[in-house]
Amino acid sequence: MEKKSIEYVLPEEIEKRSFEIIAAELAERGITLPAEQDPVTRRVIHTSADFDYAETMTYSENAVEIAKNLIKKGADIVTDTNMALAGINKKVLASFGGEAHCYMADADVAAMAKERKTTRAAISMELASKLEKPVIFAVGNAPTALIQIYELMQERDWRPAFVIGVPVGFVNVEAAKELIMETDVPYIINRGRKGGSNVAAAICNALLYELKKNELNNDLKGTQDNRRDGVDRG
Image (cartoon, rainbow, N blue to C red):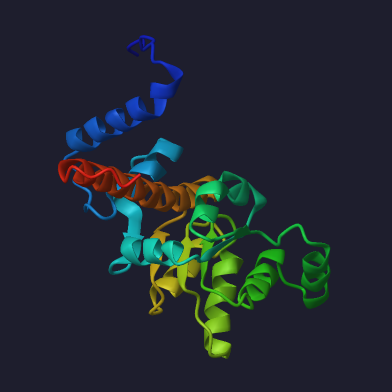
């Protein structure tokens, strides 16, 4: 096996270099990602070092634009693990008026799950469905969370604003993802068994970073336009 040489990269340049490598390898594989989906899928590949996601990441129509508009309007994000919660950039989310939640460690959630003989993830989704604002559900671990979301939609007049469905595993994982794709709810889902809390957080962050980048670009453009007009508007 060919020995890999060490590449010396400044700490602040590591992410940039990683994305350059991803771009080169996608090109070598002849893969061109749809422009809207590109930043999201690339960040998932960056998080996982797995190029299979270029083939399996699945988006409903205008999914990325819908999710970004929800965040811009202050939507909250609910995760099914504290690991995903920890990975989401809550400072950027808060700058748009949103908050991230995870109910998995709540004592009452554990008690309700035991009493009803179901999972904490299912109970967490039920509680989250009662939030009185738009919610993006980011599921990276428990297929039962996706199943509960689907069942809640069948049982009452409720639907989530958006679902990120990337649970990882073997039991009911693929079937749960398929259930969400059968609905009219906008989604980003990774087909198959792969996924994880890190992937769910990466998708959320990709959306947040794109929004922040657009905001900064608009601010820069406004400053440049003011200068061209010869007006300093502070």
